[in-house]
Image 1: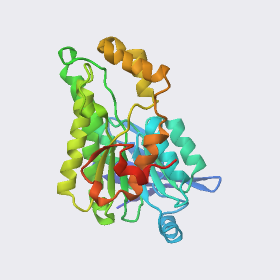
Image 2: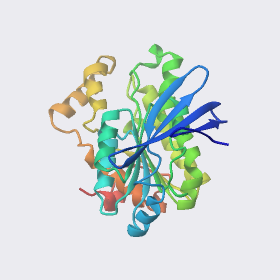
Image 3: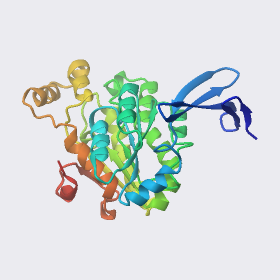
Image 4: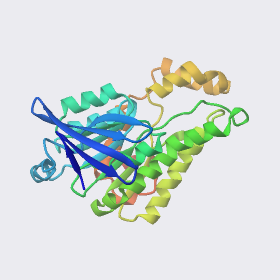
Length: 319
């Protein structure tokens, strides 16, 4: 039974074996909830908002007013393609509701401040599977989640197989693959009931082997296989894997500035010339397609690995 202490409510969480202190105060009309985790060894405090709008009841009124609105999780939402996905969804007249996860707290705060009713944010590292597993706990979405846009990922350290230790292989798989599996498992009941969608940001490296990209390519191949498996195991959920092309993101900058020395010369020239010749795609090109797929991907696309500009995706390629 909860205990009260001043303006705080104290619960004992059996899952984490911690006392959870929930404290509320008002700031400019907003109710801000502070959740303090207390155990014998750690004390961590984070400010979180677990519902859309100004109260848990907001979502029902919103969905009545905007029947085409979808509730969508976007990971890796604070930069590059993920940022483009989030911006596209928020610009829609359908007034989608977003749960945005990423590592850049300032970007998440900007999203929250400019879209206070339609955005819930979660700051954390997808390498931390505890964070991933608990990311959506307590979020009030009235029993419905329409889509996951799983965009987060890491290139790793760009080491060749003969240079790589097992820990680096494990870490890259944990971020790029295992975190997706954990989040999907946590959300499948809601996705099933909504006949929802899972959209992966994959890579051409899933089918093309670049020296020093072995672990990255292997993780993206695993993601494509995961999409095929989900098609067969979860017929009520549409799962699509997208090749975004060579995009002007921080990853491309890292390739040019940190990792070229470990790549073959022909591959070095490919990535250098893509930048110098202006061939890098703006993140909005694939990002907008992924956003549209999260909203309305058709069942016949399930299990497929497609380039963002594939003719089969013509109806999703919007400016």
